[in-house]
Length: 120
Image (cartoon, rainbow, N blue to C red; front, side, top):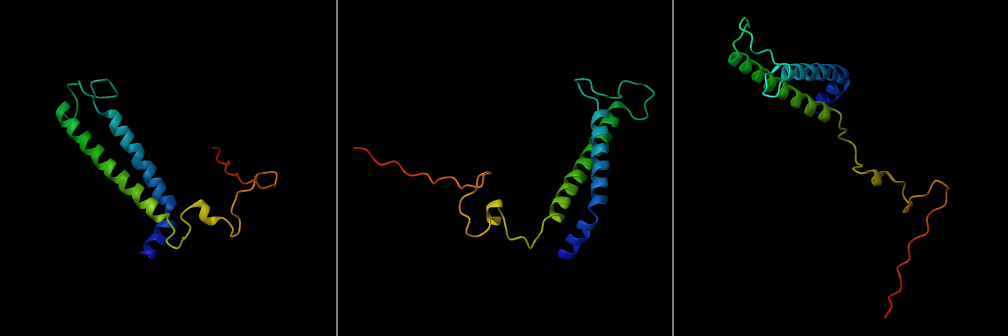
């Protein structure tokens, strides 16, 4: 699995270009669909290659196909960018040992807060 992850990490630019192309195609297909609110639908012409119903079916299928490819590429790129040997899960895990409180930009550590004495 690490060999596949390394290969995909090396090809991240190609995956990104394919991802942008799929995203652009999906946006175009969505904008071409006829909607009740207007949009860039091409329906209503009598000389169209597809009927309005056939065009809607083709565009709906293309949208589903592009959405599936988009989702799969997103997961694949996210998986390929992870580092399996990384032990730190949080930014706090990367803090140098011995440093318990963050320092302020002036270099002085903030005074620890003292609990208030209970009053009776």
